[in-house]
Image (cartoon, rainbow, N blue to C red):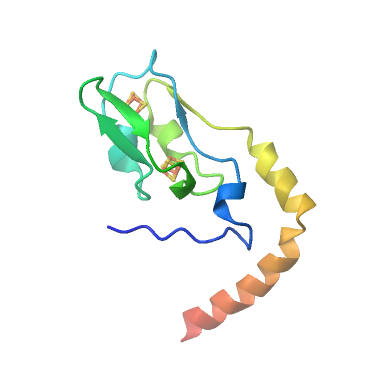
Length: 109
Ligand code: SF4
Ligand code: SF4
C-alpha cells in the first residue's frame, strides 16, 4: 500500500515537527504500533525486537493512535498545543473553509 504525503493545509509536511518517538526501555516489541498505523510510519527491527520510526513525515499531523494503543505507554509526541499554535499563526482556518467547499463538491460528485 502506497501512502502519498501531501502538504498539510498548504504547509509542506517536512516543515511540521510531528511524529512518534519510541521509548525502547518501555517497549516490549509487540508490534501493535507498526501494524496499527495506516500510514506506514514504522518499520521493525527484528534483532532488537523494537519498532523503528522509518517515515516520520508520513505521520498524520496530530494523530496519536499508536500512542493510545500502546499498552506500555512507550510512544510519545510533541505537545498538541504546538499544532494548534501553528494553525493560529499560519491562519489555517481561512484555508480550511476553502478546502471544506472543495471537499463537499467532491462528495456530491
Ligand atoms: S505498541 Fe508499544 S510496546 Fe508494542 S511495539 Fe509499539 S511501542 Fe513497543
Ligand atoms: S500517530 Fe497515527 S499516523 Fe502517526 S505513526 Fe501513529 S498511528 Fe501512524
